[in-house]
Image 1 (cartoon, rainbow, N blue to C red):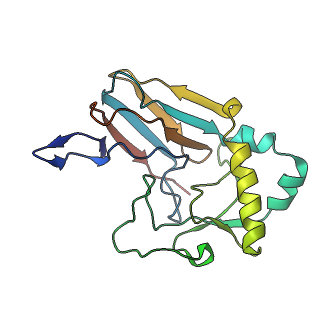
Image 2 (image 1 turned 90 degrees about the vertical axis):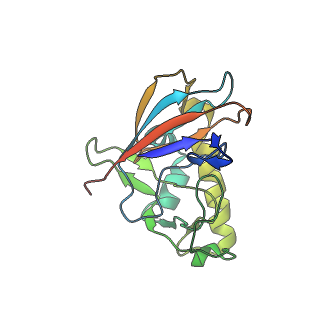
Length: 198
């Protein structure tokens, strides 16, 4: 279980990510077998802000223009392990200047859900992503188009947290992000993840 919190006791944080984790991402896609699902439990929430959004990557794929679907079929992308979702460098890693050489897993851009059989986009995080086999500029253009499409409001759900709320999501076919909130307000959630069987 991870403690997600901006609260400090005697000047020391009691959890991780603080008031970070504000950009779209899927959890731990930089490993070969990312968690299949996550569970988030709200213990303390700020009076405003700090809402979480999820984007449905099955709908995003289904509505992707056919030329984009064709251009990403059988393509794999780098899922950089250097930075966490708050943009902080992980211990033991160095600055990445060339996304083609970023450490981390390489995953297909299109995945088939093992239970539903539906196709979905699998984007992970935008920072230092790279589509294998393409020129850097072409990879950047294609990734920008995919991210712009995938994070449209029509694919999203918004959770306005109340104390005691629990949300479970499928990490294999969603992205999520958090709204900003007043860093002086307390926010405390517990998160656990469910291992992937595949």
